[in-house]
Image 1 (tube, one colour):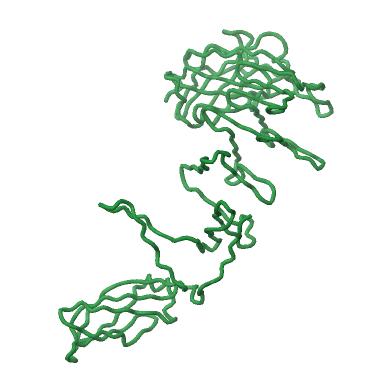
Image 2 (cartoon, helix red, strand yellow):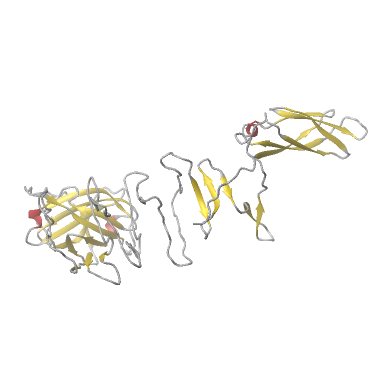
Length: 430
């Protein structure tokens, strides 16, 4: 989908508010922006959230988009006071998150006094040119934009408890409350957004015995995230295993308190559960009943133990779906089936090579034979070794039989030769 068809961009920011029109017309291809004037003061960044929609009001296709941002002192024309290009911003379900000034920090002088207008241009996946979104959006400063120095105190030295801010793109409310949340941060997209090039976007730290970031409630949820169109919460990292961490000796993820609530794990590829990530003791994946007792476990070696039956569900033509149950044994056996032919009353059968590598044929194993003849035949196994077995057959009058027979070989699984009725230590209910 070409970004030339983009008609709507809804933006939410923190340090400044964007006065947003609900519709934007698309201009021609954007030209290269002039370098903004250089200033001596330190630059700032502004949290910036947005949504891109097509001409039908639907989110644009997901992917990595490039953006050009520029500040002007007029709604039309003029030279850019500041500009930057940000590449590879991920857009999911039309929404994206970044910070103005992330690549080229905005000098404090640029935001001081006068009118400011933001011009945005977008380049979609596989496109070569940027498309400018018009009209420009006016910025209204609502809080000090310049960062505090390393020796200064907070940007706002006084308490804002009980005060509130609201804007078209984002809103912030801090108010003491006994019936709801002590503090709420509300936005069309992100209630709270923090960005940093190197460290934490949002960091809470405690040097004492407290909690760096805490949410507390006497009756409801300590921290609450909600969205009507996307994720209630989003966690992402630049590695493949640290997107979300649960602290403490026991980490729990619970569904709603509703008695019919379900917990879903969804993925576009595999769902992987790794036991004992630090490589220590043998850990177990446990399924428990409502009383907290184990009913099924899988350990790191892949051993499956379940209290109930194990069955396959098979759909029949006339009787619906039915369960077929696994045959259980006090020892660990593998079995194979086949057929052979007696010649002059004798046959030598070689165990199938692949099956032979899954079992231990040096241990005692079992062979069962059944004749396939038009007359009665006596079959008997005359020998077994680690490669196969021998069978002889005679008719009732003692003549060598000339017929086919079927066989079943049952041998102990390799590595489990001594396992028999192993004791299981189930964990009882909590």
